[in-house]
Image 1 (cartoon, each protein chain N blue to C red):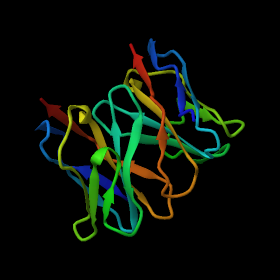
Image 2: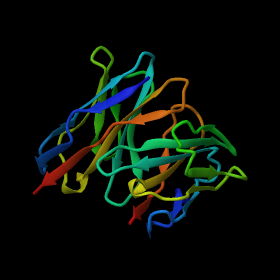
Image 3: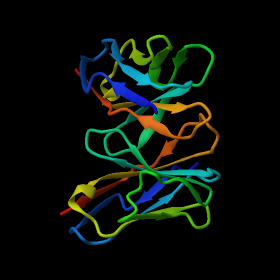
Image 4: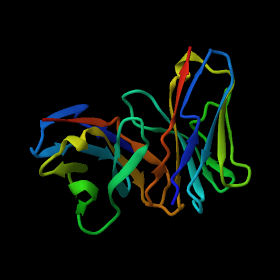
Length: 113
Length: 114
């Protein structure tokens, strides 16, 4: 069975500062990893995903994430955040060869002016 | 291209009443998911369809919840009777069905049970 732990429930940060949202996962088999963003009163939208290959994955809106197999982590980063990045961010994992996706509890990113 | 459509967006009902949610996935997407999202939590899978077949309904509380996707396109999720603890957002998502593909989410239906 897989699990996902998002280590921070809330992350406040000033505009134009860098940010890292942390995600650790647990699985006995190889996995695919995802980050989704949810703006208020909207559904989730994919930011980026890791399936295979390069461990550094670039996504939309200037976000990137690095897959670290030894530390079972998939942290999300952005070098300079904007007010518009204020949202809920979800890390998710699914087994390769499977269809079930497990989502973390989410990290609320709050960007302050 | 139209996204995943859900209706209604909001629903308020009294406990013990029935309620139904509707979802129209992206055209051509064979896989359809219903998720439950409690406040401050991530989505939790209720049921997954491959075309019209429910291939994973292990987390669906079958005593009060039911779902259907009769023609393999749109889907309905029903709760009868609703309980106070069912208050949550119900999300529908679809994907082309290939493992590793992203899921496309609808805006959700926010259910409040009084």
